[in-house]
Each structure stands twice: as structure tokens, then as C-alpha cells.
Length: 189
Image 1 (cartoon, rainbow, N blue to C red):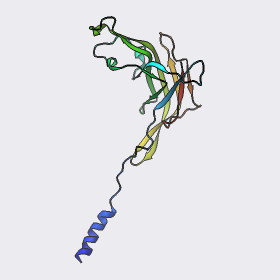
Image 2 (image 1 turned 30 degrees about the vertical axis):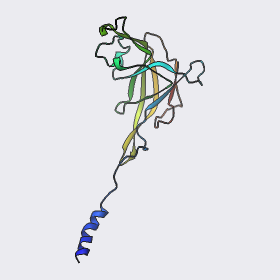
Image 3 (image 1 turned 120 degrees about the vertical axis):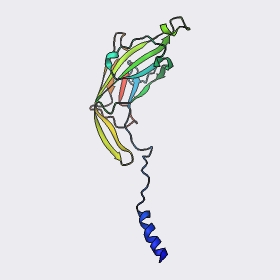
Image 4 (image 1 turned 90 degrees about the vertical axis):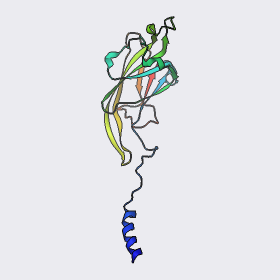
């Protein structure tokens, strides 16, 4: 009788256990926007941007950036990258995201390597504004929601130093960004 009573007490505990709710790494998450850089003369040809630095900004009125590099500036630890593709994270709480893309970025020590106060950066700055509408999509109980971006469009402000991005080309009309396996835009330069 004791064994039967123990079985009746333990059986409900075993049947109420749930498997762990872990979100698998293979589950889709909020995607980044993928931009490929191509040759402005032959749009089918991929082309590297040299010394590229991408800065996310909240306030587009800071564009163009002041080129001075104070001693405590975060730009001191940055070096430009040579690349033909970038992944840009879009804001999931707003319908617009701004980036400053700087090509041929370098810090010039103004001939005084021991004096950081007079350093400045060189390079060509472009303000990239990405507008979209956000849609939250349910993935699973463990993973929650992801955000997809619909009706995405891009505008470029070339500032006063001349353009280095000549065209922004969406991969299709009414662009939807919902995965990270395809290019969403190409920028020709």
C-alpha cells in the first residue's frame, strides 16, 4: 500500500514537468539590414570601400561630424575597414535609423604625435537615413517576438565634402527586411 501511495504522490509531479524553454540559435531573430557595395560604373561588380567606419547616431543634426578627435574620443580606437558588405542594426523602437558612413577614415596627428589635442580625422562622410515600418512577429514561446521592417527606404545626405555613394538600389519594391541571408540594398560608389 505504501508503494501505491508513493506512486500516486510522485506521478503528478512527473506529469507536470515541462521541457526547458530555450530559444534555439537557429531560430529567426530581428534581422540586420544588409548592404552590398558595388562599382558605380558596372553595377554587377562588387567593390570594396576602403577605410570604412560606420557610426550609429540618434541625432542627424550632428552631421557632418566635427573632425577634431579629442583625447578621450571613442574614434581613437577605431580603424577603417576595407569591405564590400555591411550589416546595419535598425531600431526596433522607432521607424527611422541614422548612420554616418565615413570612407577613407584616418586619424591625422597633425605632425605632432605626442600632442593628441590637435588630432583630427579625415575621410568622406555620408548621412544614411533608413525609414521603415516595424511589425512584430511571434516566433515562439521561448524566443518571443522578432521585428521585421517593411516599406524600407534609404536616403543619403552627402554633406559638404562631395558624394562617395552615388546610388542606393533596393533589391525589390516595397522592401521587407525579415532575414539576414539576402542583400537588402546595394550602394554604388
